[in-house]
Image 1 (cartoon, rainbow, N blue to C red):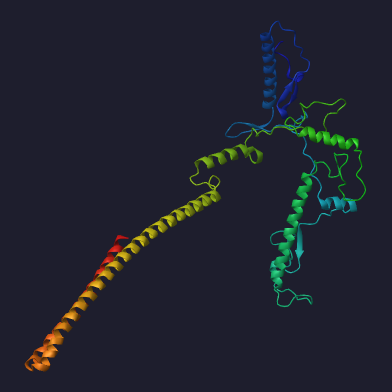
Image 2 (image 1 turned 45 degrees about the vertical axis):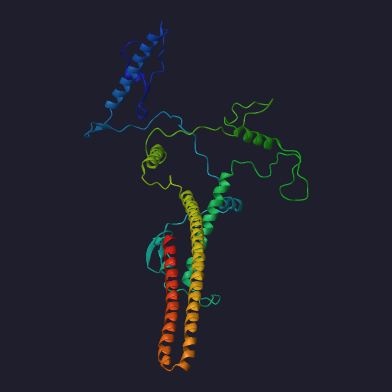
Length: 400
């Protein structure tokens, strides 16, 4: 093929940077290398034609070089992705269509009589805003002692909650758009769903069976592609399952999903204290179990220690009681012996006193000395006994 083919023989679409030569016929080359060489030559000619067309367009100077505004494309290319599905209608849209209600477009700006200026119909600083009403007129049906401003805020909160509930209801209805209807029954002998007394129909329509078969095929991992087909079975009506890949080009929206996933993984790995990794409830439960176990162990040890201490105190008390009893018996015996000795000494003395007057002077001092010595001995033994008991008890507490 010669290189002097004119540019007018090519079909150029500068808007899409595309060029084509529809009248070229490839001769049967002797080898694959010859075919690749000829394709490279033709591609070079087409690229040169597109470059010549670009340099013929008006351009503007810039720091990066001349800039050219491409014209509108002339070739209609197919879409990369299918058209978006229409959103399922809400309850109000279904009702309005049934009743023939048409939406009238309202102006976004309304004149406010109170301030004498134009304000928004909805949103911040809107017209007739309840927040800027200083006085609320009382009605005959109003409850006495109730704040009308608080009641207004409460009513607004209820309206917002009702709107949010309706929004969630619409989302649920939209999610059920592709599901089987509730009146479709697969079992022939099933009970009626409506609860009426009449029996459910045994025969299911052909369309319902087709919907059920399509749903069953989509339930498999391959979307019904490798399922065994029955004789006369038509292909499923429902779409197959496709894998969802991350977009190649970076950008806002779907283009930043890969970046978000990577950042999430890195945050989990590198964060010093991540609440997503730490299971707070599990940690609290483990701490409570350890605390209870430690308390039980300490309670058993305390009871064992106190039992040993009480046992030692009981043995000490028994020994002290025995010693006290022995000491008391010794003191009593000594006192009795002293009294007997003094009495035995005093009786002859008294007898002699009657007979010998000079002995009466020596009687009283002798008897008194014997009695005083006896009482002093008894007191000494009692004090010594108490001191011994007190010292023994203190030593037992120190050892415990």
